[in-house]
Image (cartoon, rainbow, N blue to C red; front, side):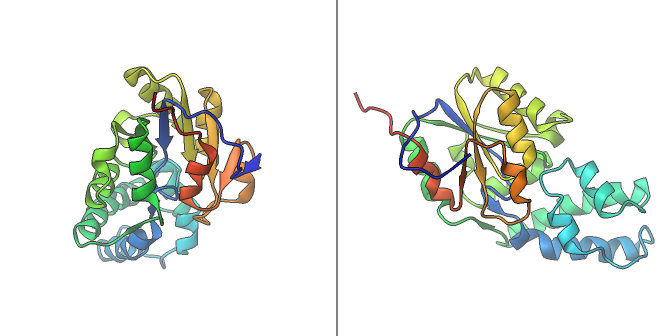
Length: 232
């Protein structure tokens, strides 16, 4: 596994990005949302215990939502976990509409440069369809992507399956997978893609990216890994 390196690789046809922890600093939106969720669950009598540590939630980001809530509140009822999903969507969209949440430094500029180079851009996330759509829309990057794919929309059980679906639907054969969790590494590996791990969010463990071809510490370092396509 390399760090960002001066020896660049040939530019791919496409780049597929994870969302949370890769493009979007999800904690800048989700921490107050998380606390509101548990206040509401207690008000509704669905989960009366104290709010679990938010770090448990952050360390679960990148998983499917049903797996996130199983990990955060393993003692919660199915009704409580289903309601938590609904509230996450509602409060998250309210926060985005109010201007909450930040992209990582350099994300818009780097995506626009990739687009300028003629590289096709996609998102593949284990999140809800509306969350993925609204984050990219409210943060002004939605129009840069050819497709937004989410497990919530397609019902895929693994990120690898979602990426395969994306590739098949868009005829993508040569791509990089860029993400911060082991599910992103697995998705790239199982689909024959070069994998770039993102180590700047701080949610995942370093070993999760052990199978990546390279690891970047800042999002713009992605450009350092890539040869610019010929203008001929």
